Image (cartoon, rainbow, N blue to C red; front, side, top):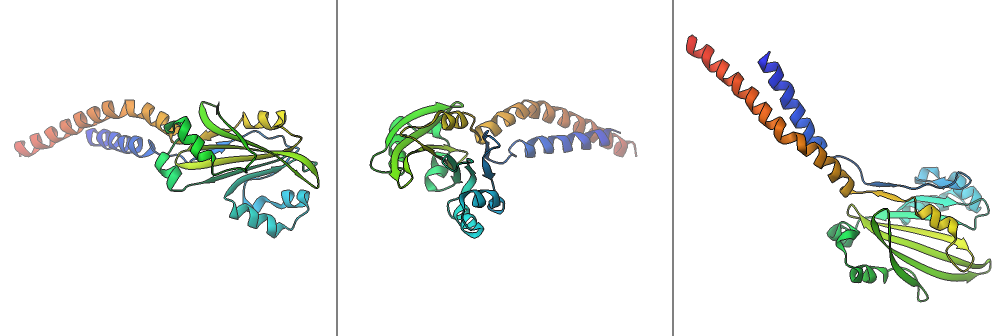
Length: 222
């Protein structure tokens, strides 16, 4: 019985330690279902149809740009694209919270064009570089807004397009729902489990100690 209890506790402790660091990095965002949405290259059919392009082109674009989401409104004028990738910079920084405002400003220089405006904002307790650029083509004036951050060792770029010469409220509202499930979140979970690890180890050692004493006693009696 004592051996069974000891084995059970040992398995419990192993589970606590191993599951403490599990969990994939990802994100959540709320987008109206009137948008055509794809979160995988294999799901681009509705997006390709709405944009009037070949499926193969949409698949290639999705893969080449490290996209994790693309959403297109009914009139195709409002579009949202989320890319996520790891490189030397994001791996070394790990989280935007480790960057000063000056370092974020340097990071911003990699994105947008010559006529961009930039600012550092916070959303969901996380720092973002917000880059806004007003552009014009044959379809008229539109605004490209990019929100850039680093979370869990990966760079996230949320690129949004909307008609008009400023970021629309619709885009701002959608962005406000973005949440990155990064290592900070996983460490919070781990810290909860960690509270049980030390007491568990003590209990396990006590049980194992009792078992060893029992075995030694039986050997002695023989």
